[in-house]
Length: 398
Image 1 (tube, helix red, strand yellow):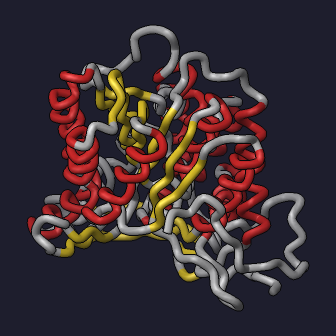
Image 2 (cartoon, one colour):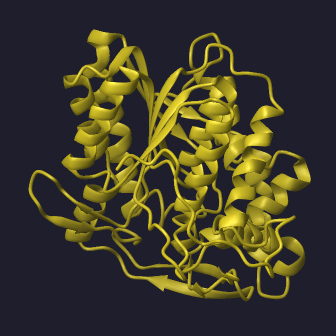
């Protein structure tokens, strides 16, 4: 079938298998163009492995360190006449390339928050890998059912304490407008922490430790974001930020629990990038558009794969002590948060409107990255051609 993008707000309802495959190949080729990661991981579990930073982590582990990888994700498989989700096609492409390269790669598709998927994943590791030495936690979900209580929680993107008003942009049309968001209730704050905080990460590590599938010296990393003053009221000082605070506090608790096996839990504060999650946050698309323009002009722009490759090579596996800030976090957002970069973005923000954004921002770059997430507008792909929408994930564990 010929697959076209069907966009609804910040979501694309269709995905293109050939475009997703080319996207994955491009990321693999980038990792292959770099030197091998000296002392890198050998056996890796990526929880949230099918898109964004999680996918980049799996690609970097496999093709930068020849690691065996297990990926956990929750994606929609295709059916005749109905394309699957982008994450499904990404995983299919990754596993094909990994298997062709002689690398171990298997996947489990299901709700990573559930006990069932944890048990299934642990059983697979125990049977086929024994133990893992790196666990990446990269889940982004709007909803979580707590497996212990059975209660479903929904997250919200809201400020705390007061109405937030600022500029935002419709990245499909380029129209800059003002948006106001009412503050969250205490219940909404608590629910967002339940979904996006650190409880599930700790549950994964506790279950894996109990099952003895964590290698001595294991490293586990969860991804976070801080961002600038421009976005903090709706992000870092809002409901999401409260959840990130909980996630980061959880790292210290996990660290304590891993001392017996000389393991460590780390938070990596990453750069602002176009993801399905970030596209849903008011103000962020406009900020990213201005940030992209500034960082590209400075020659320091990174996408997911460049960011994660630098994280692995220069931070996690640098042959020395892992550098962290005063709160114990890895700061791979260092280029984004450079004072000169932020000063330029602040300057551009003041004059950003529908007309000026065409020249002072990189809305085309934002829109292109958004479309690429779903396999569209990828250079070299013929979107007029028939493609087989029914693609199998070769390492999927049933």
